[in-house]
Image 1 (cartoon, helix red, strand yellow):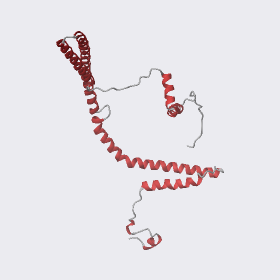
Image 2 (cartoon, one colour):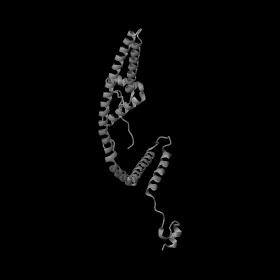
Image 3 (cartoon, helix red, strand yellow):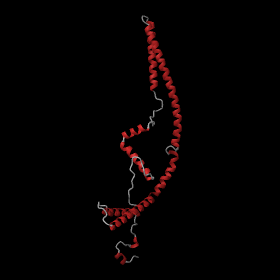
Image 4 (cartoon, helix red, strand yellow):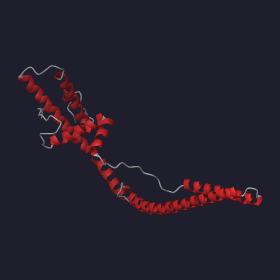
Length: 242
């Protein structure tokens, strides 16, 4: 039994000490918030004035750094079960639907090759048919012109010539309609780099900001890797707090 004097001395002490458990995440995040508020007292636009203030700011910097590490560890622990579940889900589905490696994409790629080969063959046969029909239409049109020219004064010959004109027109319509029909193939346009200098000039002129951002990213990468001379850039060193 809890002593009455203990309760009097500490009003929060209750029989059985059944206080709600402290959430370590809330505790860690609250600590960061408190330290952040404290940091605002120093980071108010005024520079450090003396060594004592420097030491205080250093201690605060280290505290908030450690508080952040502690919170990140709690975050990892908190999401670990979700990571395991996500990993299990990915392992279950990847063999079937993973891009380029799963059964769906592998099957589609193979079947697509078969379909493309067949459709290319059909398109070739169709093109040959259209060309043959076009040539036949030209032949009939030429024959119709000759027959019309030779039919002057001859009604029967005129009728035969008119039939040739109609036949030539029908074959021409067939050739045009066949050429317009679907082939099952689609056009895909691509760009093939053939002149690097002209391509770079075009890319810069099209979007200087994006082009320079790419150059800056490349320069930052090689400087971090240890390069100290980069054409077109001034490489320099700055000091930052650990």
